[in-house]
Image (cartoon, rainbow, N blue to C red; front, side, top):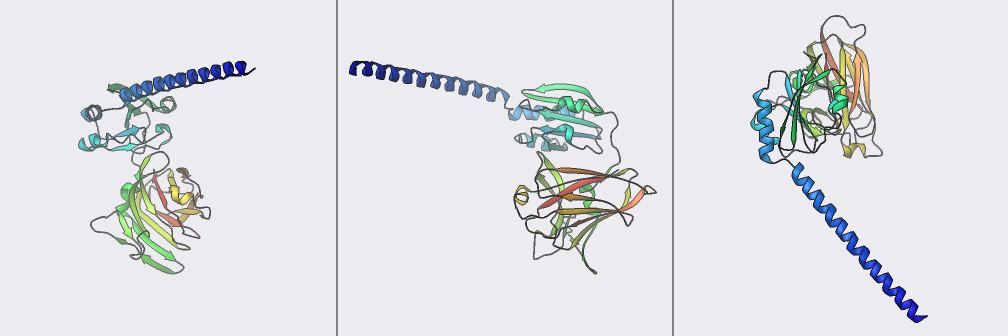
Length: 309
C-alpha cells in the first residue's frame, strides 16, 4: 500500500513539474510574440515625422488631422513642428467636424475601428498611405459643415458675466490670455476659459465653466451667423462625476433674448451631445447667450463646447 502511494506521489510530482514547464513555455512564447507584435506595431519618431510630412505636403485650408488611438501621443511633436491642426480621438465617426472639408486620419496599432461606420456617412476616402506601422488616410466630406460658429474658437469675442438675482458682475478678460475670464480672484476655479482636456475618449478643446451655486454664468456672443440651430457638447471630469453627491449642471440657450433650449449635464462621466434646432427664429445674425448654472457647485468640474450653424 505504501509502495502504491509512493508511486502515485512521484507521478503527481512528475505531472506537476511537466505542467509548470509547459505553462512556462506557453507564457514565454506568448510574451515573445506579444513583444514582437508590439515592436512591429509601435511607430518610431521617424514614422511620425513621415506621417506628418505626408499630410503637410497636400494640406489645404479646411483640412484637419485626427489621430487615433487617442492615447498614442508620442508623435505629437511631429504635428506641432509641421504646424498642423490636430486632435487625438478614439471614435472618429462619433465626433462633430464643423468647418472641416477634408479629414486626415492618422491611425496606429490597428485602432481605426470605426472606419466602416465613418465611411457609411457622407464621406469619401481619397488617399491611403503608410508610414511604417502608421496608416494615413484622407477623407472628403461630401456635404461639409462650413461657416459654423465654434464657441471655443470665438471665446475671446464673448461677453462673460455672472448674475445672481438683480446683481450682475462682469468677469474680467485677461489681456495676455484673451480667452480666459476671471469671475472671482479669490477662487481660481471660478473662471471661464479655453482648455484642452481628455474627456470622452478624446483630447478636446473645450470651455471650462465651473458653476457657482444659485448663480448664472453668462457667455454671450454677438453677431453669430446661423440659420439652422445650435449643437452643444458637454461633460464632467472623472473626479467630478465620481462624487455621489454631485448635482446636475444646466446650460440654458438664449437666442436674441428668447430661450430655445436647455442641456442637462447629469452626474455621470462621458461626453454628451444635444442639438437644438432653430424654431421661430428669424434672420441669420443673432445674439447667443449660453447660461451655465447649478443648485450646488461642489466638485462641478464642468466643460462644454459646441457651435451655431
